[in-house]
Length: 279
Image (tube, rainbow, N blue to C red; front, side, top):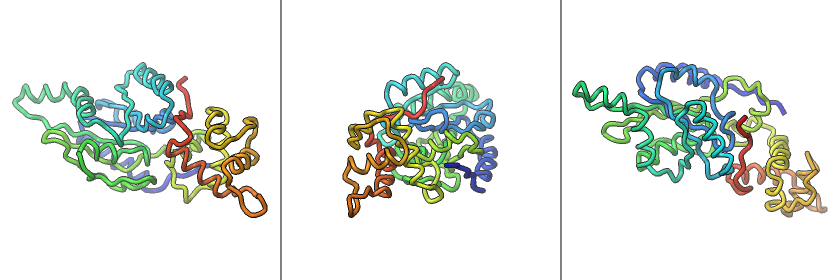
């Protein structure tokens, strides 16, 4: 399957981000811990050059724990301040300390001038990566819009966290060219691209093929697949039969099998799986 999706509002988002960067002291970037490299926007590094930067590997509870540690070492080796988090169960004090550490120099410079500086930080990331959930946890209530589908946040929104900290919630900044088709398809596994514009049958088959390579035990335990050499439609059929997704005449219910496979992967019910490894 081929993915080619870059809606007009994404181009507008890049312009808005460029304008807002002049007003912030810190950029807090969220990526998905299951796809840490490909769920980052390659243009962002150039855009935020000269700004303090924190990288958060969100949804770490859904990723392979050992692989997450490898990714943390990889990014830290690149000189990035990087942490693994679970935005839904975020500990605000710990996260506020991360922000304070990253902006310590700017605050101290202002203090020498007799100014109690208000730190302004921009929260960025691809759609559906958990930016608004992160902000809501820091705020202590629901103030930023959240949802399980991409495109929920459609405009910039300033949120006051403390008297001296404000966060900017931004629309998801998606990969501008989906020319790496493997990465593009894996982003679709995560729900980064709206399902409505995808062929979900093909997407689910691609997902199951990848799981068979990366985490074959998940297919055994979740779907009772015995022959792990199966691929494509044959693998989907084994998943359907293993879970009893059958129509009249004992025919596999492919539509249900596809929907369940995608939903269960996204919800972590297949186990903790990371789709790519650091190189």
